[in-house]
Image (tube, rainbow, N blue to C red):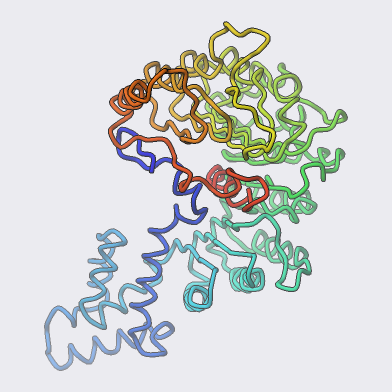
Length: 506
């Protein structure tokens, strides 16, 4: 387990289990379900019965803590954080009723993964479908949850109070259990929600690839009904085939000029054009996330001048580039994709199967004042050599480019480098350069190479890194690594990719 000096767990849990980062919230939801099940079968839909019970107790002059009027209980609960309300609800039956007042369920995370979670979801949806304001749907689509997700969205279609809707699947495809697509039904429900909500502020399509073909239709409806309210829009996808794209998709960049409050936007690279950057002129942009899959010579690559204008209009905006299975894009990244004036703060290179040393040189030269995070994860290739990836045979005496990134990029707080060999001495150099400003330094033991002559010297280097990063720091062991990292033919890379990219949408 990798810890930073401040004790934060960095990425390891997400790498091992894509749903682990939500474990606390799921545990709380499960406990709520247990509380709710302890009430009679009609308790979920009979909050008024609790009021009547309290009134009867008051008529009997049985004044005690378990017979407080509901309005007083609600007031008391309103001052408590969520976990404290949960514990307080164990006092008695009436206090459990108070826990499930709609006022305390404005934000709900629905987890669809098994029969128990689906049952709990249905119970919550039946009671709060018209009152919940922020919804996150975490769905294991590999089972039968596409059907349950659509059923849940159908319940939410006429909720005029709904302000935020986030889809968070563990996979990037959306289909029924028998393999048939259900994209049309999904788009229909989303459009109804867009039309009916009085104030929709955030919408995430959860990187579902099948929705990309309907992105234009969704944007048009958002423009017609929610242009004054929308602040977050996540349209980027995770594709099974990186070369499955339409080079003519970029024809609707101008539609974004109506979103006056848009601050977070995620898109696939084929939609990134000069006209899009020009349309995003509201000055409210704080995060632009671009997913690069394939690359085609007919793509309308953006110009540096367009990025200069974009930054002038949106000086607080961060650019996050995510390369996903981008076998061609990784080769074109330094020449055709990156531009000097990009406000690049986060770069993720995930399972592109190649290392481009020129990219690191671009990072240290162009983004020394902006780059905050660098995550580079690949599977071990069968023909991989023992030479460290950052070694340049054409200039063997040149400084290590990753060390240069750590040195020159003054805002860098995170480096994750897995799947390529790296010198232990250079790892120590990074720790020395960044010191306690580096909150996350994640490498795997199997990829660390050393030139030192003895085991003792290697241990001395590890000890010094721990003194800098914190005593709990250590390289990832083989047991900590996802199977797909150790062998590209085992496991599913999307289990690593999805949690890393979904966190960009909030």
